[in-house]
Image 1 (cartoon, rainbow, N blue to C red):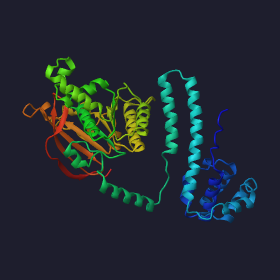
Image 2 (cartoon, rainbow, N blue to C red; image 1 turned 180 degrees about the vertical axis):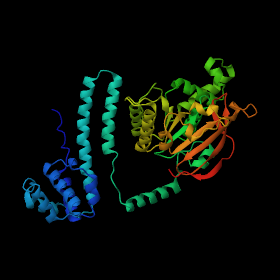
Image 3 (cartoon, rainbow, N blue to C red; image 1 turned 90 degrees about the horizontal axis):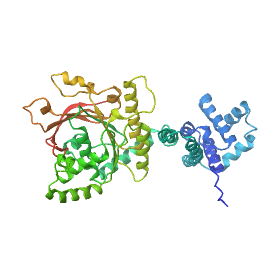
Image 4 (tube, rainbow, N blue to C red; image 1 turned 135 degrees about the horizontal axis):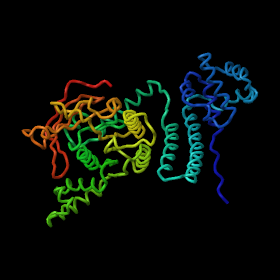
Length: 444
């Protein structure tokens, strides 16, 4: 015999929440804003909650008499059990002190009931699926809707609660290092690291070293036992790991690609592979990956074993799985969704991006924010915009390995230009000199 499933509701919690609102209407007003009536399992509780909302809106007040009058006006008083039932609610809890806990219980059961419905809908989609790709997109959309309902939309919070959380953050920052350190000392000094919920862009013309810098950051962060996920839409994961191996073993990357490996290089290669294998680093090289795929993959890792940084190589190769009027709209949508992903996962998301060809026609080839390709939303959504510029590609008199890392936008601090050294044999970057930040601090 199958075990009997427990009921997914708590009549006592719903009654206690309603009673708390009658005991302390002002102190529970924020809960009445946050919780929709549909979260109550019992119909009569939904009617009472709706009448409380109406009192709040019509009278800017709530008390027992106003509630009775509103229920009577709506024809619901007898349906909810009359005045006797409303009076009973006042006896369920002696204080409104635990109203938030009662609300959390109500919300939990709502999420569980919705989860059961979601499971049934996913089963239906599985039986009706026409392709794995379509099924994945449909399931991701259903899960995204569920998550946005129960993980987001937290409602308003009084400033006292936010201030307390800010103080806790400040205490924690005294005890732990803020931000994800990139391993590039000058960049970390200027930015404080890569911060959770931030969307960052790394933009450059082709061949300047976007992928090389992303891999440098991936290795540096993973060496701190921080968990890193790399979406490689342009290169196969084996090619990416081969590049990492060249830097880790200090073996020429060209030799690894051609197989021209000297006898004395095998030992450092084996040791390098062993070190790489121990890193908490994941690759996903799905070509033309959709936003739904990126989100589902990142969410899966974030839930177990956890996630500290997401890297995307590169943004313009992501597909949306939906039509858009033009390319600008599509790239803008991708940008907005990556920002939403960073906030939802509470991890930094760093995406490589292409620059317009127009800068090649200028005398000064240094990129500016206006050179971001395909959409103005990129600049708008990004918290941090980094440009790579190698003067030696345009001026033979300049060292061909010297690379400028331009912090063109920094929502939380100063901008500036840092010097990096590109190591072409190993396809990696290293720091070169101190940054020279400008006095400008972005305000948006």
